[in-house]
Amino acid sequence: MGQQNSRFRWPVAFEQRLEAPAEQVWPVISAPGNLEKFHPFCKRNPVEKWPGAESRDAIHYYSGLVLERHFTRWVDSVGYDLELFQERRPRATVTWRLSPVDPHSSLLRITVKPDIPHGWPVAVRWLPHFTFVRPVLKRYLRLALGGLAWHVATGQPVRRNQFGRLWGF
Picture 1 (tube, rainbow, N blue to C red):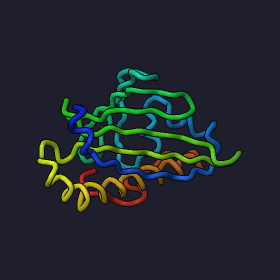
Picture 2: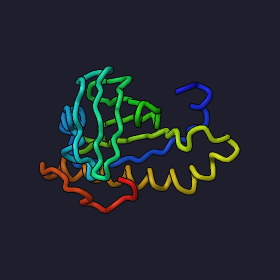
Picture 3: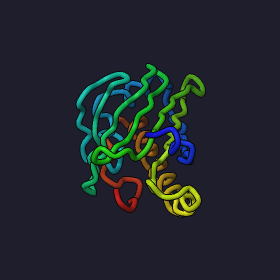
């Protein structure tokens, strides 16, 4: 994504405290196809290349939406950065960061910088961002990280829409 556009991609973040040490969470979030275990809107998570900074996979949502993930940075036990694409068009930059809280818990923070609405003048982009994109992304992240917290605590895979529905996913 162009440097010029990245200045106007306001970040949306959510963090979840997990009742497991970071050493236990990292293998879950860094495993190939990991989203199939804990993401309540993910039907499939096929992997093209794994692991590391050149990893590639896709998210196939129950709604039929498919997003490609191209990883750009990978730091073992800490997190990764990735670009989300839909039909070869950039949609967002995403960072995952895991940090220990104490010997029995950790914190995972996901930050999304969406490129939505794409191509609109900056003077009007803020309105849809703050009235629609930001609230939907916050809820999406909360539900997805809730799925991770549940999976880490129980060891069981998350069911479709287990924590609630979200428009478009």
